[in-house]
Amino acid sequence: MANHVRAIMRSKKWELFGLEKNIKIFTSKQRLNEIKINQKESRKEWLQMIFSYHAKYNKGSGEEQFWTHDNHAVVSTNSLIETCLNYTHENPVRSGIVAEAEDYLYSSAKNYVEMESLIEIDVI
Image (cartoon, rainbow, N blue to C red; front, side):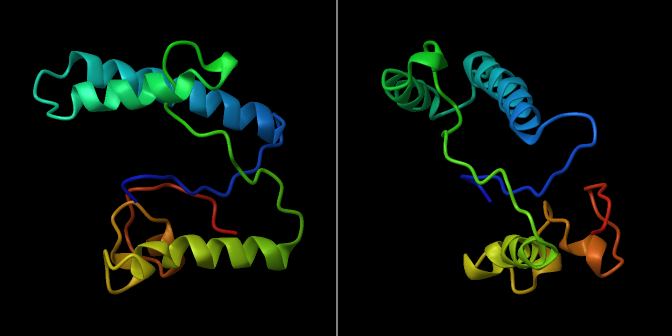
C-alpha cells in the first residue's frame, strides 16, 4: 500500500514496542534522507512541509515526523492473528489495486499459496 504498512511480528529477543520503535526510527531516517537528496522528487517541498507540520504536535519527533503514532502492537490469540493476517492480505484487493491478494507484489500472501515472494517470512 502506498500510504501505510501492515505487519504481524513477534520477537523472542525484544519487546514489540522496542522492535516497532527501532523499525520506525531506522526507516524514517532512511526515507527522510532519500527525499532530501533526491532532486527528482517532485513532491519534495510538500512532503517536507507535511512532515514538519506533524512534528510540531509531537515533542518527541524532532523537526520532522514520518510515521504516525497509532499502532496495534498486541495481538494475543491465534484466531485474532489469523483475522489480522487475512485482513492484511485482502487490503490491496479491497483497495482495488489487485484482483487477488497474492498478486500484490509487497505482500506475504504469496508465501501462503507457495508462490515465489519478495518477502521472506515465517508462515504462521
